[in-house]
Length: 313
Image (tube, helix red, strand yellow):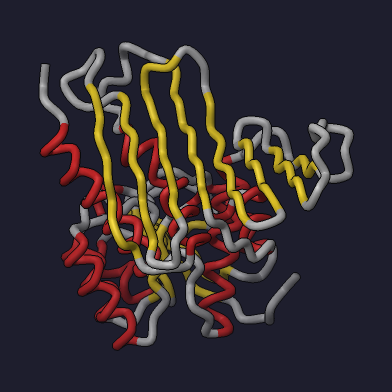
């Protein structure tokens, strides 16, 4: 559904995690007008620029897909020119830098959106709509052992999406964080357990591993009179309410099954749709700086706990 007929001139930095077909789709829908890029994909809809300065002055908004352009100096320079920014990768920014960039965006009246792709999964969109008030949250995220994946972080690569879902659904200030980890095969934690307690009484438990025998990714929400079980591998949400005690199978009308395969480009299209929507009607981003800072607050406290509890073998 088109929100209006406004067309945005778009600047693109880097190749990163997107395909030129995504840009072509937005041009075809009339949402993107002139598209220009610096060190990005070659495509007839993307004007190739010679300098970074040309990109800044030719666009209404800038899409940053490359970590090479994801640092504070580059982003702050763009925001000071009152350009809206979509940032796919925030790993090079500290929490204090994100706060400063958020302040710059607010002063300039710009949208500053982050690539929290998990928020745009059909399964999570459905969970957001349900208006849950859980008392207990349980997350299990296990990745199969791969000796080539020593760089995989149990916290940043596996736990972050579920941490975000938990703190969003709890909808309360965080009271305390407890965490511990062990290094079975690596010199950093490859199995981590964490517990979050919120001031409204909600408790969230997380279990994650990068040395499991099979893939598992589930998060469950328990509240008075109902239970919600989200399985991200099968893309299935099971709901049990009231006194119904039968096991809910795939044929049940209480089971919601979404597209079996999650296409990263379709998720990116939803992110850019949201970015466009926020710019054109002046809405707050669903994946803005505050959401990232909320996640960072939890992960920083988990890392702090692990530094005290984890001992290198």
